[in-house]
Amino acid sequence: GNTNYSLCPVGHYCPSGTRFANEFACPNGTHSPETGRYDISQCQKCPPGKYCGSPGLSNYTGTCSPGYYCILGAFKPTPRDGITGNICPTGKYCPGGVSDPVTCPAGKFATNEGNDASDDCLDCPPGQYCAGVGAGSSSNLTCDAGYICTGGSSTATPTNGQGGHKCPPGTYCPAGTTVVYNCAPGTYNPGMGRENCFMCPKGYFCRGTNELVYNLTKITGYRGNTNFTDCPSGHYCPDNTSTPLECPAGTYSAAVKLERVDQCTPCPTGKYCHGTGKGTPTGDCFGGFFCNQSSSVPNPTGTYPDNGPCPSGHYCPNGTLAPVQCPPGTMNAITGQDKATDCVSCTAGYYCATSGLTAPTGPCSAGFF
Image (tube, rainbow, N blue to C red; front, side, top):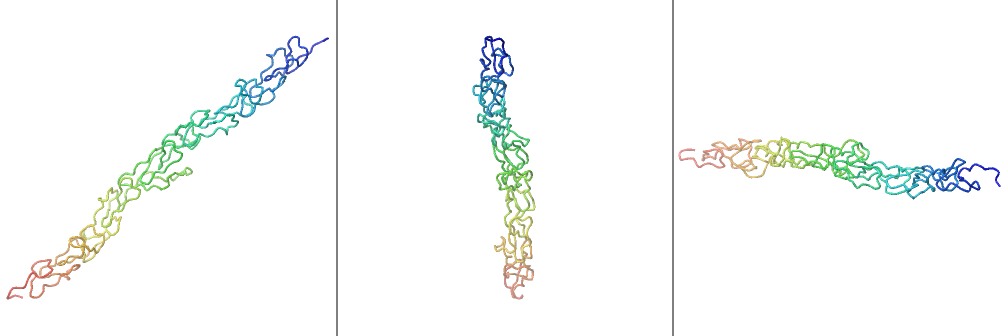
């Protein structure tokens, strides 16, 4: 029989009456680094982040696997019981050897279980924001109008450039947009964070750009209009004008900011306005022609009193404001005359009693010549 006794070895406990050293091993999920233990309660639970995979251990077996967390007393590297540990849940990630999952930060989400690295936390999609931490899915919450969320935004109104920003002047952003839109031609936007652009007002134009989407890589030089420009002389600009409209031939405008075509000034008497978009008349009408008003050429072909050749019985110097009548004693049967000498003396044997005659008034009386 025994003549002495020995201390219970590490990894075991020895209650009264124990017959041999390894009769009572500390169970799975525990260990005992000290000798002389006498009760199972003295077997220590496997520490957080570790597992003890067999009976009779003096130390833990190893660290828990990536994608899992071990709370206390785990007996395998991939616990699933929810008591000693579990697979890493959605919205979190678990590097190897952790006792508590690491939460994905705001602006990110993780839809799968078993994530093991921070890279498994995905950016909230463009156009959306993920406000809370530990999101298990994208929120489907759209970012506010006037802002663009470029990905990874934690707020509906990002302003710091992380995950998005306010839309710049000259652009607009509908709610939930994934691109920044340039103000279209005929519209403008002077401020930041706008949902829509303003219509260009009457008397002004907004040139704009045909590029629909603003290039987010640019820092300056917004392509959309940030303001409106005065409609120039020789033009008129209704609402929503992107390119000033030219005053038609035969008219002009020295003024700016016209709103309607009927505000273009008819070319004045004696002048002509050739072509469109004139800020001043082109020049005087030619001698031999009468430009009453709104003439587009210096030698019109109409019939007096409309724009046309100088009427018979008259002559028309350059730029005349009215045909000049041939004086009494003269006449002119031909149109298109330009000087006083074109008025010829009355035919012999006849008299020309009034001005502006195209033929003699009648024969001279008997006894006169």
